[in-house]
Image (tube, rainbow, N blue to C red; front, side, top):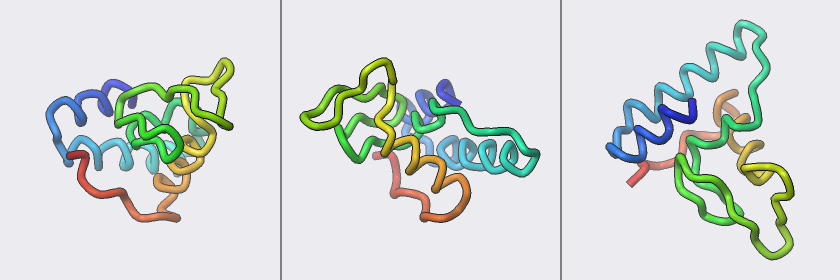
Length: 91
């Protein structure tokens, strides 16, 4: 999923972006648990890291050993489950 997110960002391809969501939903339907790195396809609501980028430390939101802020991972999980709408285009 990380590679697809990077390609979607690099090529500004909305179809690849939507493919990530389909992959995630398919995995959930088969009982596969989402991994924390699944948030790479979204921009971070905390530090504004773009799709395919790692998060950076922000005041009040240290990363520690994690690559992504917990808020970004939670947003990705909710998006894949269909609880929140897909964000706008990657552009």
